[in-house]
Image: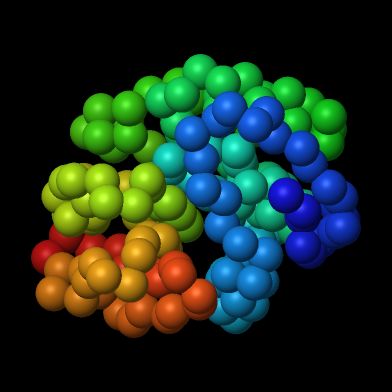
Amino acid sequence: MRIIGGKFRGRQLRAPAKLPVRPTTDQAKEALFNILANRLRFSDIRVLDLYSGTGNVTYEFASRGTPDLTSVDRHPGCVRYIKSTLAQLGVTGKVVKSDVGKFIAKTGESWDLIFMDPPYGIGGLAEQIETIRKRGLIRDEGWLVVEHPPQESYESLPGFVESRKYGSSVFSFFESGDT
């Protein structure tokens, strides 16, 4: 895994082999961050990374100067790895060991960008997207970005703006709001 942009650009990270993850590819990350750079100012936002896995996306935001990072994953090995890597990078971030569904149902916080990269084929993703929007977890003018396989579509959900396909991944973008 490699950080592709910002002050840690080019840094190689080696995650333990036994983590149950499917990291976002460099090509897809680069495309995503090019899109986000036109919509957000990384140095002024709060980011929530759901289904964080290795923390791949969290490190990209950290590398670009995002000051407020929260990563959520239920796997203890992933949580330990993210905490360790953030410490190695000298970056502070909140790392939460929790089931994502329970976390979004209980949190009282909101973010400018929420990124979700769940295991492909997970059930209940549409309901989680709706919960995030209805509970106001996305700040005004903020975004929810969901990475999913091309076989899935979330275009009919409220707040959907667009989808972009990169290889075997699709990013679906949603605006804030409660409708």
